[in-house]
Amino acid sequence: MPGLDGGGALNLSVSVFPDASRVVGIDLEYLGTSRYYPNDFRLAFPIAGTGVSDQTDVSTSLIGAGVRLQLPPRSRLRAYGSVGYGYVHHVIKVDGTFIGLPVDYHEQTDSDWAPWVGAGAELFFGAWGVSVDYRRFSSSASFGEPFDVPTAELGGRAILVGVAWQPGATPPR
Image (cartoon, rainbow, N blue to C red; front, side):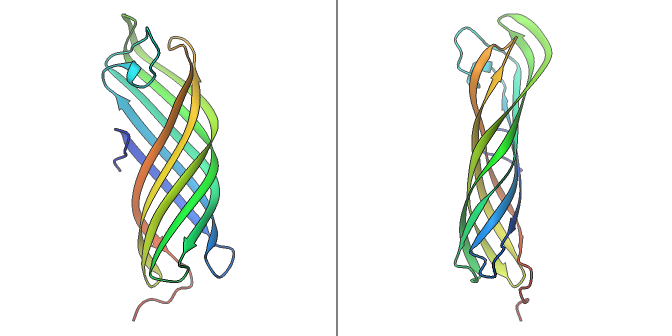
C-alpha cells in the first residue's frame, strides 16, 4: 500500500469494545512505514558535513495499544478517533558513499517508545463494512558510526482502506 512519506506503509488494527454501546473501545495497532531518500542522506538527517548518496532506506514499525472513541455507536456510518502508545523499531540501510568514501552496505537499528494518533470512518452494511483509516506516529532515534547522528526525528504516516466487521450485527435484508 502506498504511504505518504515516499515509500510504503502498512497498518493493521484490531478494535475491541468491552461494553455493548460500542462507543469506547481498545485499539491494538501495528504501524509500519518505509521511506527512501534516493540522492542525499541529508534529506533524512540535516547534519552539516555529512551525506550519503545513492539510496537511504529508513523503515520504522510500531506495535502499540490505545483508546478509541466512536460515534454514533450504532449507525451505518461512524467516525472515530484514537490515541495510543507503542514501541517503535527503526532500521536504516545505506548503499552509496559517505563523505566521499564508498559504503557498500550498512545497516543500523534503534528503538524508542512513541505516541500515535488516528482517525477514520466506517460504513457498515449489516455485519460487514468498509473503513478508511489515517495513522501517524513520531519518535526519535540515534545512530552511531559511520552516520554519527545523535538524535533524529523519525515517524510514519499511513492511510489504509480496509474491511470492518462488527460481531453480532444482523445482515441487511
